[in-house]
Structure formats: C-alpha cells, structure tokens
Image (cartoon, rainbow, N blue to C red; front, side):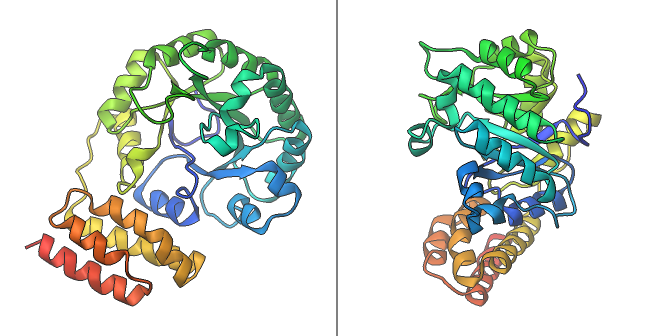
Length: 320
C-alpha cells in the first residue's frame, strides 16, 4: 500500500536527544528519506515550554518533517495537534512505544499499550483536531506474556490513524534482543492502512529482507543511523532501484563529522553544542584506528576551534 504524500518509504526513527534539527539537516543533505523530530511532550506544549516549542518548530526546515507527540491526555493531544500546522509539521506521530521508565510511569509511551481505551481516545482526539495525517508508533506488546500488537494495530486503524509503525520488541526488552518480524508481519496482515516496520534494520539488504518477509509498506531506521547518516538514503535507493551505494570514504566521514559539529554549535551555542557533539563524535569514529584515545581527548574539549584541530589531526593519521 502506498504511503501517500511521502517521497520515500524509509523513515528515520525519532530518538530523544539525537534527532534534532542539526541531525535532520545532515540526513537531508545525505539524500532521500522521511525525517522526524524528537518526541515532544504535549503537556510541555500546553505550558509553552521553550525547549519543547523549539523541538516542535520545523516551519523553517526546507524538507517535510514529522513531529512526534507524547503524553496521556486526549485534550492536550488535541491542543498540540492544532498547533502542529502552524509549526510546520508534515504529519503527526503519536508515541505509544517509548519504554523509558519516566515516560511509562507517567502512563505515556508504551504504557498506553496496556490502556487500549485511552490510546483510542488520544488517537481520535488528535485526528479530529488537525488536518494532518496522524500515525502511531507502538511495540510488540508490554512483555512476552502480553503481546497485543495486532489488536492494538486494529484499534489504531479504527480510531483514524493514517498509518502505523510497529517495533518488533516488547517494552520489557527495551532495545535488547532480536526484533520479532513475525509480529510485524501479523500486524501488516491484520490492517488495511500502511504499516512501517521497525527493528534491527542496519543495512539496505536488511531493509529489503524485512519488506520481503513481512510485506510492510515502509521501514524505519533508528540506532543504525548514529554515525552513519548516509544509511537512510542508501536504504531508499536500494528499495527503490536495487542500486547499492558505495560506503562513505574516510574523507567523507571527516567532513560530515565537522559539518555536524558546526551545526550543533550554531544551533545550541558553543558550550551546549560541544557537549552534545561528544556522543556523535563517538559514533562517527567507531571502528577507526586509535578511536578510543581520540574520544578520550575529545571529551575534554569545550571549544569548536580546538575540536576542529583535533579532528583534522586524527583523520590525517587515519588516512595515512
């Protein structure tokens, strides 16, 4: 089934503290793929929290961006959904899959898989409040004794969701273990709306394998994008044309890393941008020669100029 209105069947996964504006800019520069924000708490939107508004405001981004909302109040979801049009959202995704303790303890994220009535009310309220497409991201279930993804998918469809994304792990698994593609396949067979498959896709070939096995209409990629922003477009090209794109060169990795750090500093300021850049640097250089020693040096830096010098010197050695 076609994903109407989207240029690609490949989505980046929303990841808190990672899929911010600089990261989306980088992924867009690397090629085609659907971009998403970090999750935005609807109660923070209600209280006009500046940080939440900053996350949700995608109006000036020259590419379509899906905004993901999180919470447990249908009324607050409706209010936030009305704002999303003004903030430039391409569509709205509702987070019903986050396994993080503080989210779940607030009866949000994957906790909503245990409260089907409330989950349905949230979807219906969001759909009614906004002209944008509304999707829902959820998991296989709460744990292996409470696997309800198929039932939950049918509820999402009946409540008005335009498409759904299912992660083939339970809340109890978090991000460990192996994703259950059989559950994703069962979800796809149970509903008529498009289904996006999420879990263990770390290459174009793995994405093709999932689509062939489960019949999903699209795929979502999360942790495999860390340090490898080229992957989203590589998967898109492989699924669309069968073409395998070359792996990025060491020089391309260096240039993209430098660009990413500069964008972070520009967006968050030097102090904040440098602090956030440390995790990204670790992902970009993973597996390279003497990466551990380089990371240890980088974590001590707080100035962009010093960071650029260290990166230039490190990659000069790597490329010898």
